[in-house]
Length: 115
Length: 113
View 1 (cartoon, one colour):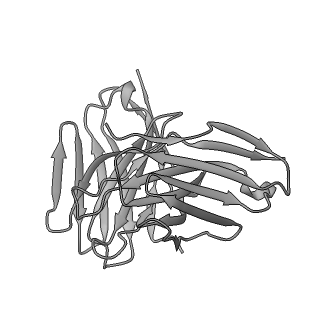
View 2 (cartoon, rainbow over the protein chains, first blue to last red; view 1 turned 90 degrees about the vertical axis):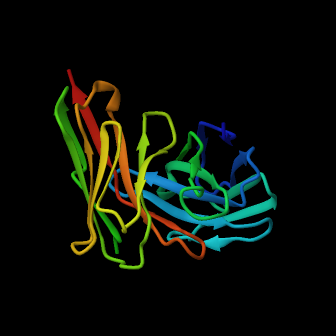
């Protein structure tokens, strides 16, 4: 089974703190993604990476950065956390190739509260 | 701009009934339409998917209907069960390039006994 592991289920941080969300996948997938999930807004893509050290902005990259130094690990960084970044963050990975092989596998999510 | 519009946002269905969730898209370049199911405390997981060259795909009690000319697709859950209670997301992507997936806002389905 594909496993996408997010390091924390719940995080509480203060405004202005630098926050790291970590994600690890064990299936040697090329592609990794960070989404945030908010009620009424669905899943919105923050950043994605299609290879080590490569990254692309998603739909809502402002206030975030990412790092992918190893193929299995993709980190989301909030440089200076703000209250409007309180959300559920979901990491996903996906192999290369066309459907039906390119299924996205999601982690269980990290619920971040910024106070 | 919401590229994939999903409705309703919430749905209550009696056990044994049919659950129907509708989605519409704007970008005619989309060529792959997956549905994801998310249980509380879990990440979304692929449920069923369709490509626009077919009008219907069925897997067990789950059926996707696709109308290319109307740019609409829908998920039907037949004989809905309490265990189907979850949030459902429709999505769309373009097969080439980065295959970025655009999700709908989600539908919270509750199946009551």
